[in-house]
Length: 165
Image 1 (spheres, rainbow, N blue to C red):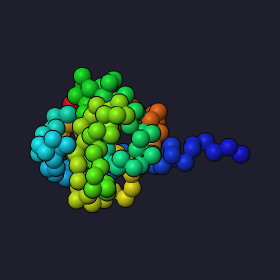
Image 2: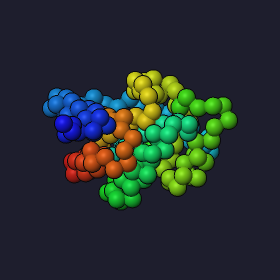
Image 3: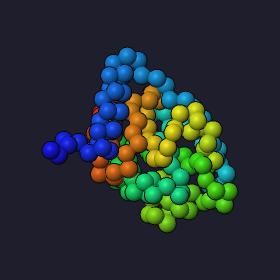
Image 4: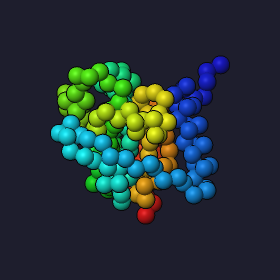
């Protein structure tokens, strides 16, 4: 008998459903942080207040991250003008890694912050990719470890959060 949901979809569904149940209570604020981008400029999560943020924890060596990133670019292409931003946090990298250059070579335009190990620990990230959805008020609303760029839950969460004011 064929399962109704693939393992990846089941995980995403579970995570989204679990967080949807939690969202009936007051959602938790996403921990604020400041990291540098590749140019050495300080960027804080709070700089994005008022936007829906897709916070993507990743590493240059991660094949699953590479697979997911075109799907994150598609979210920005489709919903960026409505206030959606993708913000990467690169962590657990080799000393000479250049995450923003790697994204550029892959055709991705979203900004990534570097040396994000402390922030990954703050968010209790256990593996890559891990992607959080943060609403306009800065509250954590969903998390997924999917690597499927066509996972419908990604678009669903983006549309849901953008529709909220």
